[in-house]
Each structure stands twice: as structure tokens, then as C-alpha cells.
Amino acid sequence: MSANLASLLVRSAHAWPARPALARGERTLHSYAQLAARVSKLAAGLARRLAPDDRVALVMKNCPQYVEALFACWHAGLCAVPVNAKLHTKELEYILAHSGARLAFATADLVDAIAPLQGPAARLTEVVDVESARYGELGAGAPMPMAARRADDPAWLFYTSGTTGRPKGVTLTHRNVMAATLAYFSDVDAIAPGDAIIHAAPMSHGSGFYILPHIAHAGLNVVPESGGFDAAEIYALLRAHRGVSMFAAPTMVKRLVDFPRDADSSNLKTIVYGGGPMYVADCKAAMARFGYKLAQIYGQGESPMTITAMSKAIHADIGNPRYEQRLASVGQGFTGVEVIVADSSDRPLPAGETGEILVRGDPVMRGYWENAEASAETLRGGWLHTGDVGCLDEDGFLSLKDRSKGVIISGGSNIYPREVEEVLLRHPRVSEVSVVGQSDPQWDEAVVAFIVARGEPPAAEELDALCLENIARFKRPKRYVPLDSLPKNSTGKVLKTELRKLLAGADSIGAER
Ligand code: AMP
Image (cartoon, rainbow, N blue to C red):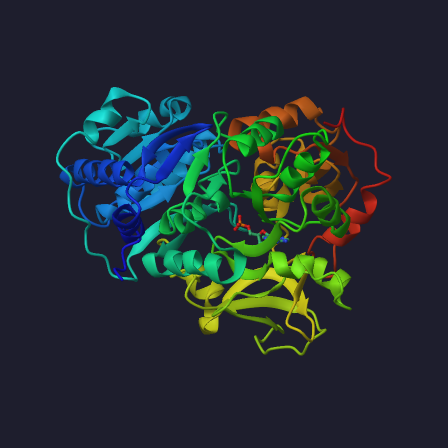
């Protein structure tokens, strides 16, 4: 098997040329033969402009061209940089500069944000609007044969927010992404030709990794017309396609469950949930509605979608004496992936004891792009240090307890408190700030900022404006809580656990959203 991920498409196009490969909503756009031809021509267009290993940014909301652009990058021997479309312009700028992207594909809504970054003197030489004639021209020439790739060549730079407030580029090689693809078949689900996946979650993130197993087994990649998550649209798509899977954050699952009961979901095959904690009651409600069609994964950009999994069969094993405990867990380590819980010296802890979750195996990233220090720190001793805290039971089922890096997961998106804190500290009347997550029925967690002011606390509108100028909208706090001082330990570290205890009783500055 070729190390190049693009081989998955070439192979399926040979075996299943007439099968539908790509759809927008209910409408099939291309068969496997057509998709493979479009990809090899687009790859040729890229290869005429760029050199092997160059980075190509995908600054796109979900759209069918995502699949083409991703595979064209690999077919041409280039590295894709899928960027979260919800980020602020300043964050996009940072990622484009840091990755050294030479070309960017963008959806029309995002072209204006990044167009000023291109130029003869800039590293970024061209921004291609995927809805324009230019995109068609790029893929109009002769096709090219697939470029040779080594397994350790970078395939996907996955930018993740960091504890330092600056995004870090997780460097995923062809080996890493191939391992994550095969792990889907071994531990999540089978896919037959003609089965479909609906990409309602961001393709720059979780859902994007599930394009690959569906290409590998000649499934149909369906991009909703809306390019996002809309429960009514999902139910409509479930009537149009069969053998349907989707990746969904717990909030999305909840919205599907809350949708009027008469909506038909018989064509649903599997919902893979993950990316944030799912409560047992919500999981049971989803199974009561859909049957045993739920599977769970726990992963992170550094080991994409592949740390632990809980199959549909485990979800259906209701007679198991440890059933409740299992449902509350994130499942067992993926086949071929080692998962341990370790103490602060990286020594494995026995079952039942809580420590940091460490991971080793083929899906684990090569390191962070141009950040040797963070790579060495996170991969020390050959283990990925996830920053998640958990414990294993006697059967190897992992339960997550906390996130040592304090990340907040709101509506399926990760928010690092530090990024928000740094922005709020720019206000002249903010002397200290600490950001925590508060449980929220709609978003799982909501961002709350505790503010120690110099004199009169600033108005919530001023703080909001500061956030909107600097960071993505979804990271803006839902609540600002004034305090005289932050609770700290003897070394001056802010005690976030104490802050969380204050959440229920505290008054906010201005209105809460
Ligand atoms: P990201 O790198 O953006 O994919 O975020 C990964 C983080 O999301 C992990 O480190 C966990 O803290 C959290 N996470 C992922 N999957 C799950 C899950 N199934 N249950 C609870 N938290 C999860």
C-alpha cells in the first residue's frame, strides 16, 4: 500500500468507479471515477505552482470542494492545513504565516479576510475562491499521477489553541492519518460502498478525519447545503441517503434528540460522538430515540480521533454488570494504541488511580510545527502527554476526570482560558482575570471571566468589544463576574476550583448571554 493518503481515493475509484462519492445535500455531485479525475487534475494545477511539501491552507466552511482540495494536496505531494473557519481574522493570519502556506483555498465568505495576506513579496502567493472560475481553471488541465510520499511526510497541519495562547500546528503525517483511518474500521464501525456520512461538524476538525474511511470504502461524503449543523436539515438528509453516519459533538446529539419525535431516522446507521463530555442521561436518551446506533471516541488533535473508543456493541451490552460505569467512560484504548494513566514522573498507575493520560502509537503526531520546545515537552519519553486527567478501571475502560490544561469545551469547540484572559487584560481597568467553564444546558460549558478591576469594573459591552476585536466570537465570555481578588495558593497560582465554586452565587457585570 502506498504511504500517500491519496491512494485511498485512487483505489476506490478503480474498484467502484460508478458509486456516488460526493454530494451536496440530497444531490450527488460526483461518482468515484469523476472525483478521482477531478482530484488528479486539481493536483496537477497545484503541482505546477508549488513544490513538494509546500503547505496549502484550506480556509473553508464545510463544502464539497473540501474533499477535493484535501485529496488534491496529498495527490500532489503537498501538506494540507485545514483551518477552523470560525476563527478571527487575526487568528487566521497567524496560522497562515506560521504554517508558511503558499496557497490557500477559501470559501467566498472567507476570501476577504485572507486576501490582503497574499502578494509578490509574501509567502502566500494565491488565494483561490473555491466558488469562482479560478478554481475550475486550476483543475482544468491534464491529470497527474499520484506523487510518492513517505509515511513520515507531513499530510495535515492541525492548528490547536495552546496553553500559551498561541495556536500550535500539530504535524500529522501520512502514517498518523492512515492509522486513524484504519482505527475507524477496527474499533468504531464498518462502512459498505454506498453508505453515507453527513458532515455537519467542522471538516477542518473531527468530521474531516472521517472523510478518509468513507473514501477508503467507497462511501458517500455528504455536505449539508447549510455547511453546518441544522437538526431539520439532518432529518431531511436522513430520508434521502441510506446507511448514514455522522460525527457529532454532544450538543448536536442533544439537539437531534430534542427534535420532534415523528421525524424518521431509520436510515441512520451510526452517530459517533466525542470531542467533549457526554452525560449518561443524554446518551441513554439518544439510544431511546435512535436505538443502539451510538459509538463514542475520545481523541485530540495530537492523536486525531484515536485515543479510546466505545463501540455500538458496548453501548448495546445492557446486561453487563458494569454497564453504567462503562457508559460514563470514554471506552478502551484503540486497537494498537497504548493508553496509560501515569503519575507526575510518567510511571503507570494501577487501575482506579487518577493521573495524566499518556498515549503512544501510530496515530500520535510527529510533533508541533516549528515548535521544538513544545514538541519535546508534550512527547517526552516517547509518550503523548494529553493534558487530560483520568483513570482506568480493571477492564481498561478510561474515565476522564479533568483537563489539566483547563480547556473549556463549548458547543464542541475548544477554548483555552489563556487566550481569552490575555485579551481581557488589555483593558486598562482590568488588573487580573481568570477564565473558567461553567456547566451549561445548551453548550455543555459556557465561558465565564472573573475580573478584578482597577477602580470601577468596565462595562460588559467594553469587554465584549475587546474580545470581538481580537478572538473568535465563540470564545467570548457569556458572563463577566467582578471580584475584589482572585483566590490563589501559596505560590500565587489561581485556584480555578475555588472560582468554579463561586459560579452559582455570584452577580455578573451586565447581562448574561
Ligand atoms: P481537540 O484537540 O480540539 O480535538 O480537543 C481534544 C480534547 O477534547 C481532549 O483532549 C479532551 O479534553 C476532549 N475530548 C475529546 N473527546 C472527548 C470525549 N469523548 N469525552 C470527553 N472529552 C473529550
